[in-house]
Amino acid sequence: MPSCLFTNAKVFTGRSETEFVSAFTARGGKITWVGHAGDVQQPAADLQVDLQGKTVVPGFIDVHTHPTFLSQIVDAVPCTVPLVEDIPGLIAALRKHPKAGMGPNDWIEGWGYDESKLKEGRTPTRHDLDQVSTTQPVYVGRSDCHSGICNTRALQLAGIGRETPDPIGGHFGRDADGTPNGVLTELAANSVVQRAKAVQDYAQAVGSLARTSQRFSERGIVAVTDMMAFTQPFHHLDVYRDAAQAGFRQQAALYFSWEPCKGDLLAGLQAAQKEGRVKIAGIKLFADGSISGKTAWCSCAYKHTGSQTGSLFGMSLLTSAALEQAYEWSRANGAQMAVHAMGDAALQLVIDFFADKQPWLPGGIPSVRLEHATLLKPAQIAQMNAMPMQWGVATQIIFMFAEYDAYTENLVDAEFEQSYALKTFYQQIAHVALSSDAPATTWADPDNVFVSIQAAVQRRAYNGAPIVDSQALTVPQAVLLYTARAASLSPFDGQLGQIAPGFEASFAVLSGDIFSVPAADIGTLRVGATWVAGEQVYAAA
Image (cartoon, rainbow, N blue to C red):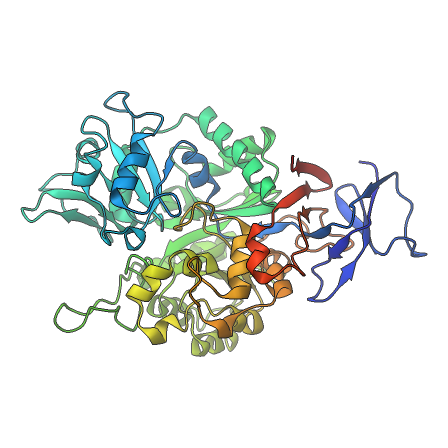
């Protein structure tokens, strides 16, 4: 690659909250110099790019997302706000699916519903989805990607009937007579129907994943994790590496779902599987469910679940024995452990388990990551910081922004006030990042980084309601949680997240100045160009 001088820009380096330069050079995919055009230290360059006064930031890193899920819903219908607001609207949207009117084994799929966002305030059932079709299977994934709904035909294909018992850790909704009503609560129940869906062949899986690279590039995202990788029906490391040959440009760190994959993973990892721009980074476990689904495991009962109806504290999905097995494997294989834990009770289970254990990963990479950490409280952070264990936290303000109605409906005021304490996280946790969990939230464009940054700075929900003003971040702090701070959570290849000598030349040129526009306008910004490892991979029309 020729060396290149980028000049005439407002460049946020990511080395601190305040450092800006106006020029930088890159060679061989790496940043070689930063400063101001005309500095005596400025090296010679083969090419020069005038950035015309634009704002430049390190490329965004989405440390908790689901590219394989995104690749699988290319044809699925969005069933979330602002596109769908009631059950008739959901039915109408599904009727427009490209496979509607086809054969009895052609699935009509949607994604993103949230019963708290629907005007009816209830979860749709098979009786609703049968209005879409009685001859074709219909399935819609809930916004949290844990639960779902399906029609009668889908239940038949999945073999779920009146005598089918609930799976461990999940629940099949039922009518008064015991007949399944199509509501699939939590992963164990949801996966029964998902397994019944037609499986892509390998070439389709590779091609679909490769196409997601354009989506990420348009959003200025230069590195991702896949927080739900599998070994069957295809090993996702193979799919990703072949997708990289087919045009997937981002770095990707894969985390394999422990319970369904451990039979294959127990044989151990090879060194080559943990190296390169696409690699196995670790495993993922589930300690609980979601706040919006009232399945996150909390120490305080959910609203409206008092003594008359029976207090509801959510679901505990992880045992100490399962944690022990996963820990022993991770330590032996030099892999990270990522644990989905939203409620404070689930978080406490994980924190207590590691109280007497030493970190096992080198180079300052956290050995254990807490995913979401919705109700991670100050006393728990203090406990973590007093331990020898090296912790990471990947959190998402997009949930509170997009699912405000469910959070206010489900959490008592005192718990709501302690949700997603970003300012506290930023100040007290060294390895912490913002992320999207796309497509697992009730928003049609969940991995739009600018929406999350605006929510983190403004602390306002989609409807303008306040979401704990005292936990607001500054714009530089929020950007750092998507760049330099995010880079520290996973074992990415080389150095990412800063525009600094020695770091990968991966950066985004923005449509406006994120550091000076009104906070209310941050969400309207877009990416004008994205560079990955010194090559331009996207330019806005």
